[in-house]
Image 1: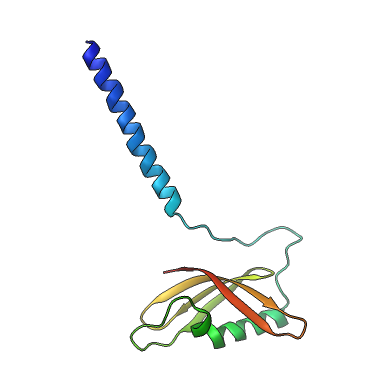
Image 2 (image 1 turned 180 degrees about the vertical axis):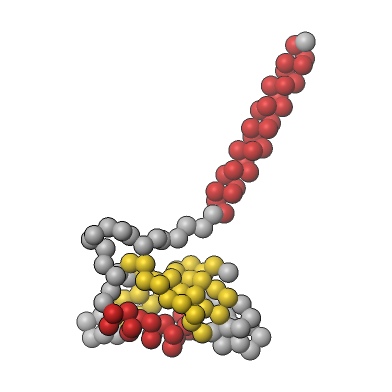
Length: 122
């Protein structure tokens, strides 16, 4: 009887360790994305700024992308969503692969735009 109880306790402990390790591994593999803020203090840039940023990203997506085009394709932007005053979600492809990327952008006082991709997801 005691052997059965000990065996059951060992099985429960091993099962807990197994499922706990799997849970932690899944949590580490999750990607976290920024979501648009609904705070009244958050502001999406003006249409003029949005248009400048969109134009810059569309013209420079091949340069700012962390991934390279494949099989002779050329990247083109399919969608840009402004998530905050300085962050956009870019969807783009080259005809062979489709990507999504979070990018941080800045528009200086002279109206020059810079953008840097922070994370890419296939």
